[in-house]
Image (cartoon, rainbow, N blue to C red; front, side):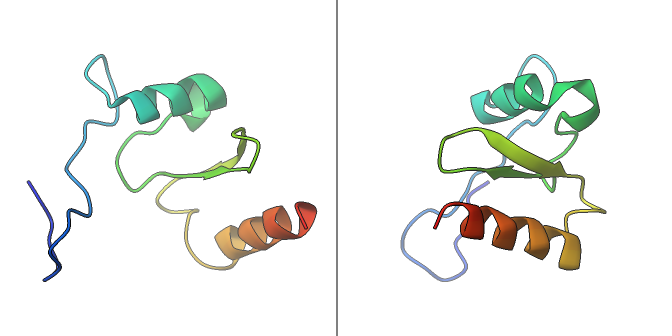
Length: 80
């Protein structure tokens, strides 16, 4: 399923996030975070540092609001 939002370029396609058919990004994330942090669905958020390593992960519930914003801001400050 292609999402367009009235633009002429592709934004995203639906991807499998868990199991043997998971998209390679989600398989990589599961290896990096371990079973507790493995993505369970596509609203899972993974904060990746400039060095390509996982800084923190967020479930759909914890990945909104102030906690996520603080983690992003801390990552940006750490790399100034």
